[in-house]
Length: 140
Image 1 (tube, helix red, strand yellow):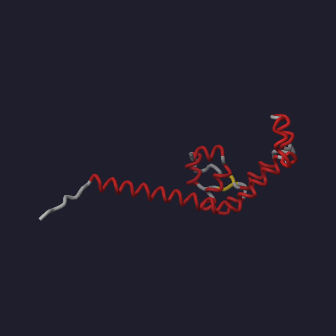
Image 2 (image 1 turned 180 degrees about the horizontal axis):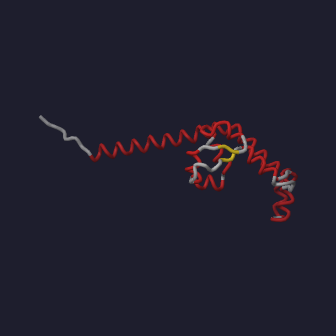
Image 3 (image 1 turned 30 degrees about the vertical axis):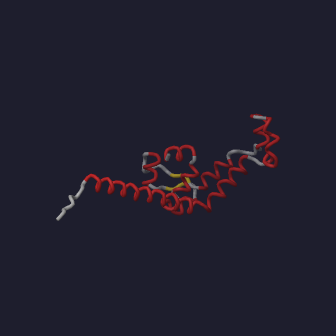
């Protein structure tokens, strides 16, 4: 799952690393050797912050959803409503800016999930160990 998130949901990955990435997460790029090693296989690979994604949004230009759907699937134009006049860049920027304040909460839940998984794995190993190594019961 981690590889898929890094490849196809990079903004989500940035949100997941907010607690360990520090204030650099809100900049253009930051370095977290442990996260970069797991995500890219290279501890020196830069991780991209929210400002990077905002700059990528601005690169989308001024094409609107109406223009895009007009070229790709004109039958869907009637379902767009007010979204037809919104540019892709505006929608992208709104998505990044709406996730930015939630990133610490998303990161806290992520690391809680990881910690719970580790505790469950330890409990499973202990249960298996106690099942395999039985202490004989003495009767009088």
